[in-house]
Length: 153
Image (cartoon, rainbow, N blue to C red; front, side, top):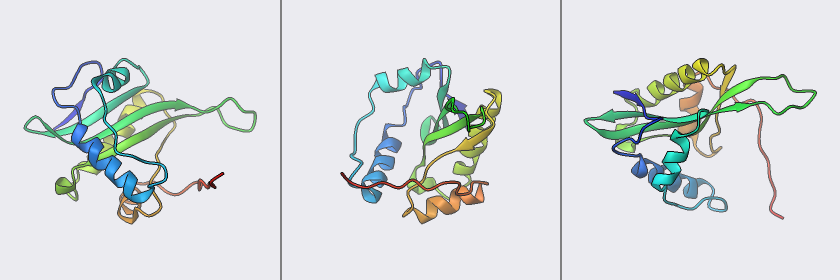
């Protein structure tokens, strides 16, 4: 069952999913990621913000997948169109629940959330080493638009 949890405290915040997501972050980019802990304040700050939410899929009251979505307005720069994006900050489905359509359900729900907030397009990021993740997003209509590059100082 898909639920929108903004505006109220969900009985089971997706702590275990954030742990799984951050463990992947460490695996893919050790130089930038650590496994952290999301306090209740973290979730409350999301729920109290009109421009973001967490969408969850649960099975018998247990969160098995989530999408943290944020509405972002384009920077006010002369060469950029004044657009609004729905940005997927985080998305994860329990590893044992993958390949069952749950991620696709979350993508569809994220797009719908964006439409209700007036977004023009949806955007997210994926680690280049995450081949399965890239394949998942491509199957759901995403394509590479830009590459982010960096160098240590």
